[in-house]
Length: 489
Ligand code: NAD
Image (cartoon, rainbow, N blue to C red; front, side, top):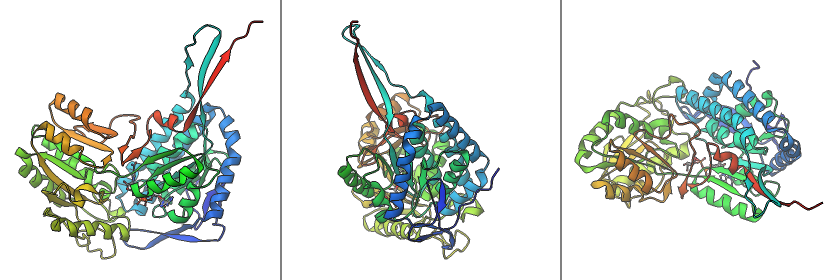
């Protein structure tokens, strides 16, 4: 098995590692120490031109490659990932600051996603259409768009790379991927393994750089035919404006403010650890993080006490200590989260636990961006903490009485990503699942564990996509309709 190296200050375009055209560099740092891990290339407009040109050149042959062959290459890629799990997990964990076992879990998820789309590649079909008389034939075919631009955030780089790149490639598109400037190492490492798996040059190109230059140049490039964006709602709006100029379709996966809705009859021993995990996993830096806890009033005091106790027990440390929670990804994110913690009491919220930096709790590390798991009770539904995405380990609690009020509070948000319902009453669970305005619902578990090909759907300000699952193959293809008249001879 070849060694997995990411060459310093380089990027992967047209099958070759090379420096940026102007030799610009970006430092990648370990958020637990603030130390630079390594440099990657800092791409500018000329690099974006090179990458898009390479992807355009590669497209006709790749689109003409048999779907089974495309699937076989994806499967080979997944196998290579399986042989490099520890190296990939270390890249993911160190770059983002998450515990090593969290990085490892992300790599296994990425591998399983690629494997899923390896199997899906040759199962994408159109339909034959009914006709008014036997003299006609009508059918549809699914065709790739061409060059797909994929722009990603930093929180789960390997999973998001797999979830966006694999279906695009399986469907016959070529890709230019721009990972986040904050955490590009795992995407680069995955792309190197794709190169080793034998994807032709130009099929998958990866460059990194700041959003305002490399990101904007890529998403406004006239050679791009489809844009997949995962990131904040604010940037999502900018990307849609750029896409409007070139009239290209956009898939958006944006922020969230997901509720855990906990009824008094729920199994608390299952629910409480899952609720705490939903806001401390990856230090709360997940789009679907369970950042609002809506609790039935009759059990609220007991629940708040138990959640706070579990939060106090969360072990915090750097990625290689492999505890429960690491630091936030950057100083900017740290300052932003502390800002919410300072403002919440002024807006009337009651601090129950946490509320500040966690350097001491993380072994006295003054240089890392550690924040305590924090619980605020009685958060006013108009407060910023209740309405905005914090992207940190901060939970806002509110009480409800009865199913109707639970539904109203669950939907009282601009976001619509995930809603989790905890109850042993199946009718109530189904009623909430039916009435919530979110792309995903889970009952008696947080998120979609245990379901294969679960669609990663969004509604409202969380975006719109058919990511994850077989629907993603349609997201990355356009339908062509063909009508034929059979002539007499
Ligand atoms: P961000 O929007 O700041 O950046 C995301 C990416 O966009 C980065 O690669 C950045 O360089 C690029 N970018 C920034 N400005 C750009 C511009 N003008 N044009 C083109 N590209 C630009 O987000 P972030 O801080 O990296 O990530 C956190 C956000 O991501 C949170 O809001 C989180 O909810 C969201 N997220 C969503 C999902 C999902 O599936 N819905 C998954 C993970 C993260």
